[in-house]
Image (cartoon, rainbow, N blue to C red; front, top):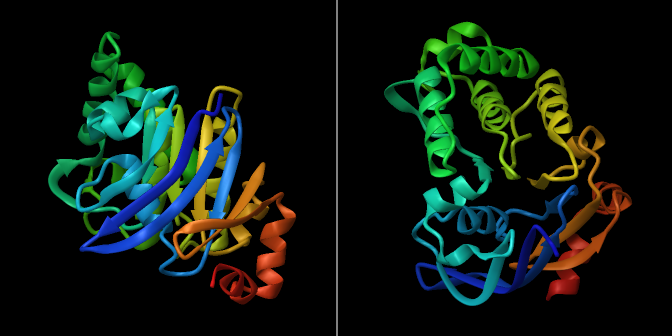
Amino acid sequence: MAMLEIENLHVTADGKEIVRGLDLAVPAGEVHAIMGPNGSGKSTLAYVLAGREDYEVTEGRVRFLGRDLLAMEPEERAAAGLFLAMQYPVEIPGVSNTYFLRQAVNALRKARGEPEMKPAEFMKRLREAARTVGIREELLRRDLNADFSGGEKKRNEILQLLVLEPAFAILDETDSGLDIDALKAVARAVNGLRGPERGFLVITHYQRLLEFIVPDRVHVMVEGRIVRSGGKELARELEERGYEPFLREAA
């Protein structure tokens, strides 16, 4: 059974259909990448999986760990182990990075019937994660994403991933705007979490991230659906040929 299974998914926003009959299955232990041009529906798919409002699922189903994902509230999805690293992380003034993460960890533990993590244990995990992704300790004390650079915000999303250790992570264009050192730090963090009980869905425009996070499967998304799937060589083909041949296929 796939960890995440999407069948014939149709999604609209403001009366416009964006996702048009998408099928996708990601088994446990695998990293799948979705590549596609702007406007193909990649981020819409990520938001729908995370439970963001403003999108209407008009047809299809999504199963996560055997459960009906679309019937779950966003907090239920998070408690079940679903995580989204956002393309545009939001700033939350007045809430420190450390406080936010500690509350998130303990909220998830409470939902699972586990005791709160002790402060010393939490800080040890947080500092280890910060070193892995290259986050300065000063940023841990700052308000969440407030006055962070674009690259720092992206690193901070991966810091959350490391601290929360979800069962399934969706990375929505985490590589955009990152220099090569930041890209390697993100990849190092993701690769460190890879394992037989965890899955990843990596959404990206470019092949360069997939040089560091080598996917088990690559999917090309055009006009709201998957038009081609293959191995990592498919990402290299996209880099060489661009999306035009796939746009013609989808027409």
